[in-house]
Amino acid sequence: MRALEGLLARHPELGLVQEDIMSAYRLMEEAYCHGGKLLIAGNGGSAADAEHIAGELMKRFKRPRPVSAAFADKLLSVDQARGAKLAKNLERSLMAIPLVAHEALTTAYINDVDGLGVFAQQLFGYGREGDVFLGISTSGNSENVLSAAVVAKAVGIRVIGLTGAGGGKLAELADVTVRAPAEETYLIQELHLPIYHCWCLMLEEHFFGEGEQT
Image (cartoon, rainbow, N blue to C red):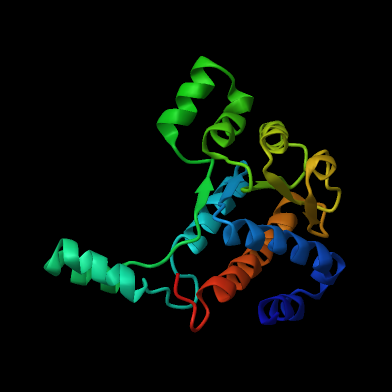
């Protein structure tokens, strides 16, 4: 795929994990093909990455994603003026939920129940069999991400780990782990961004390429 070729041209060190990048992409593609969604969690910079990924998937990343003509007609049938504007401006989405958001829910659970279980609780509530959980942890040992991964496996949700070179305990739980070939946190994070941008590009091309209207 062109996006992966471009990624490897810019970051040849990621050739070491090329197969894992593709395997993780295929899990996401399969989930979306069957009406599933992506749930994402991480801490600190990885929390920002979770929000970033959701932003790229829930609206256009690089190419236009107009609604179908059939849906545009439905909007117009409800309200001619507003419907026309919505038909022009709405963009089709790939559902992605960053578990680092939802402050009222997360702070309530942290305060009332368990600080390290907050991602697990959200995943248990939002997740359904056939979804994919993307756990981002530079060490691979973030307890709140690991707990969410355990719940995901129990529910029937496939797990992708995005980690540093070691993989940590997350690699033992995940269906696929992409180990960015670096050891220091900031260097790992510098490689995580182009990896998930590549996923977003590939997903967008697959689902919203020319002629695709869903």
